[in-house]
Image 1 (spheres, one colour):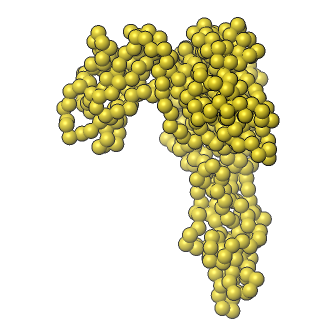
Image 2: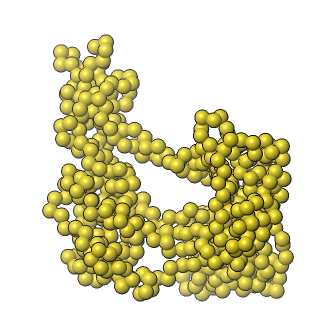
Length: 502
């Protein structure tokens, strides 16, 4: 069991530029044993596309070997600033609670008083609680990134409110990355080859390479992530396998991880219960489904022993007949029919990020972590402005619906009073109907989004937003959805998150 207090101040972002130098075939290692050479040699034209073939290790081995040797994702977005993490962990059988570990993380970060950057995350723990937590038998680890050499060393030697404040204050002087966003390599390859494939058509080299990128994605997201190796019952019937769909107009095939229907397969899968009064599904072809932890999906398994009541679950696929005993009803009513637990193009993830994307803000997160396989839960956070000086108030009165030939959408006028709109911003701050205000840092990129509460769709607005001398936002044109605020001095924000357990 573990928890982490994460205090991050982001001052700059670096993006991988999408041009012929960084986002093209020419930028990849083309040697025979390099990435591109290995990618271009991946098998793509298979004679057997039946489930028993596409589900086998041999079908995917070249693709999984490439992922193992070269990796699956590339850093395309980096964050520069200061980041301090205070980890506390202990064995679950010690009886220490996650709240006690949180209190210890707070005390170890800035001392029992905790009057600095951790104050919002740690306000639920008084001085006595934090003092008591410092005596716990737990493993403490500090992770310090960014800032300057001097402030990092001082914080490493003695974590206190003063050294942490100096470290966060040095975020603008840091040159090292404190976190990254990653893009799957297959996303880059698909972008490179998609246009040439659409131009050159089925059977072209470009389409073969696009198919390789699709299969690389399926190998990672379907075969590996979902453990979708071939699974059959003792009779050889497929219970689980990677399956392939029909080709599209360019000859491209997409993959799924498919589960067979549940229930019995033959009479021998149905057995009389111990009293001889009813039937239960058990045997070499009795397929049941169990929920995959932390998901709403199920995975098949062979049920070799009787379980549960005769009128519940897959036992209902077996019927009792006078003089005939148990029979298998293949078309029983409540079965889980053949279904995909992964379908390419439905649950794709083009970007993986592990940082709150709040440019120009300082974020303090206190996150309990119970085990590595759990997922984070959503949480509500509060914002507190520190060291205020000159700020800008972004006031949103009304966002207009998107209209054809509408050259400028003015904030503040209403063309259709029957519709109701609300506005949200990224980074977080603006979330309101009518008039509201929030303060952002100099250089913050703000995306304004108007939500139509009647028709359940949204339009994005922003860019070229006029401001008066008081910093009040008047209007935004539609040619960009990003507003850059440049007329204010720097302010710091701290946002405290309580997440978990995860």
